[in-house]
Amino acid sequence: MSIHQDDKTLLAIYRDPATKEKGFTCIIQKYQERLYWHIRRLVLDHDDANDVLQNVFVKVWKNLEGFREDAQLYTWLYKIATNECLTFLEKQKKNNAVSLSDVETGLSNTLKADAQFDPNKLEWKLQKAILALPEKQRIVFNLRYYDEMPYEEMSRVLDTSEGALKASYHHAVKKIEEFIRNS
Image (cartoon, rainbow, N blue to C red; front, top):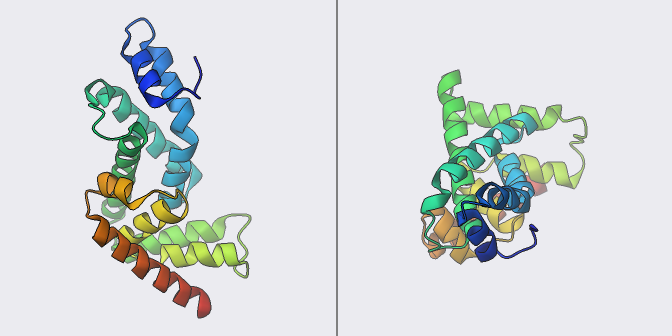
């Protein structure tokens, strides 16, 4: 069995009781890196990203049996990952009893603590600009810019209309351009 098989084949392997665990392992192997980077861009810290990713795969294991294939598997996985990120950030906010701007400041400090951080490099300015975005715009920007997710798929992941997503992305790009221009 290979991770290079299409999702329908992997799901069929998963649904066969004799190969269920092997099918699940193949699904994890196929998507774990993409999901990790999606999560990492939202929570920033490597250890936090790994924790969230582990929670994602626990939820996938518990719910994959009921996956009806109304959407693509990867869309379903991204939806779970995005919701787990939002839950994580919300818990972080509550545990610290701080405002969202303080959580964003904490994320910014995590970014600055990275050994590779160089505030003069464009890639770091981009990361700081993304962190300055409101949460929803940050998620939309990351899905579109890094994951190159079509608006139609994003609409399924975020339960938002394509028009609203296009507007969010447009506003995010304008804010990022302004941030980079003025920094």
